[in-house]
Image (cartoon, rainbow, N blue to C red; front, top):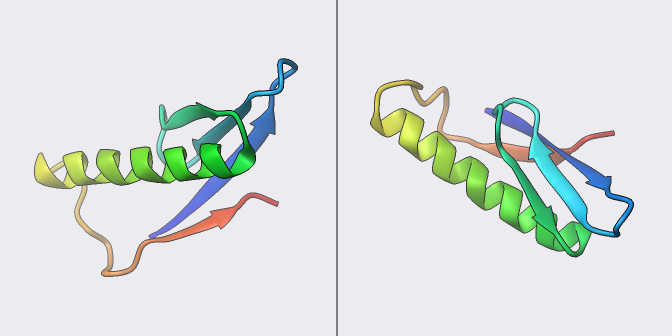
Amino acid sequence: MQLTIRLLRESDGRWIGDVSELPGVSVYGSTPEEATRKVKALALRVIAEEIEHGEMKPAADLLQFSAAA
């Protein structure tokens, strides 16, 4: 499963990180690194919940994150 992390900088200096393949998976961080860590953790929690409740079938044994171009 390939997930794409998008990072955007707000006018107040905060960074927003989101995963486009998982609606609602969006976080704020004070640095790009913090936003990336936080959005990866949230994405993994959402995926785990969906698998646990039968809403998502694990597509593969590999989960990969990449940065949006």
